[in-house]
Length: 282
Image 1 (cartoon, rainbow, N blue to C red):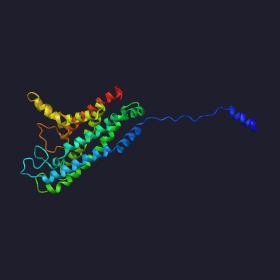
Image 2 (cartoon, one colour):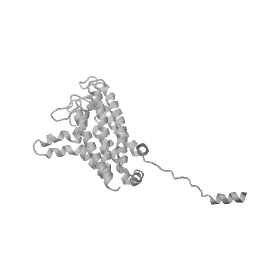
Image 3 (cartoon, helix red, strand yellow):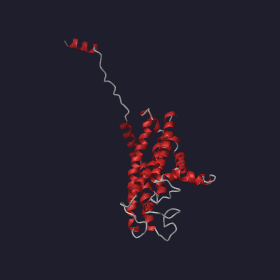
Image 4 (cartoon, rainbow, N blue to C red):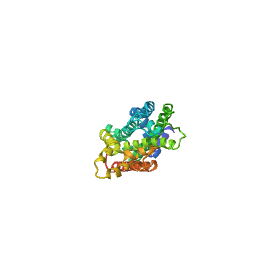
């Protein structure tokens, strides 16, 4: 009997376990990119620097404020026009920090060669770009808004008896603080887009500095009034209009228009990055 059983067992084909198949999903890509972001030391350092610039410079600007000073003790060429402007005394430094964060999050993978593994796991490619941009936008918006609110509240005691004193319940203040958080989020998205488009950390950072800080200088060489007509629509001017409480309607866009224009620049950069990511090899 045992011999017959052994023969039957040998004759019957062995069934191997069916190989498991894995399906790429949006949730899976988001979880993967979030895990990368949280595991990178540069993410925490750069994000921390951005918060430090906003909170530190904002509170110092409030403490230094002096109505008799032409600049009001503000870290800028002109005197601040509101407590929100004072709270954003470190905006120029913070925007560079979050922009560099976006560049590193994307271009860093090209520098290390990890992008090949990423795109092999996600052959459609574009979900990687959307996930990186979305994750960073949400994180920077939350952190940036909290930092701006802390800077605003932290400087109120120094501004209590001045004409610039405001509270969170003052007209336009909540929208301006949220606008500042949204501005930082869009800057981070532009950083991601530049990183995917240029694929070089140094080159992407140089392009970011040019877009955010050097373009207004170049408009000065345009003939006639062309520079004044173009200037409000540049990223460096349309973005800050999102949190400007006392704007000059002749030279500055409204907060809503500024948000629309700046978001348009971010979408344009993302579109160019998506085209290159889809059309060219890593």
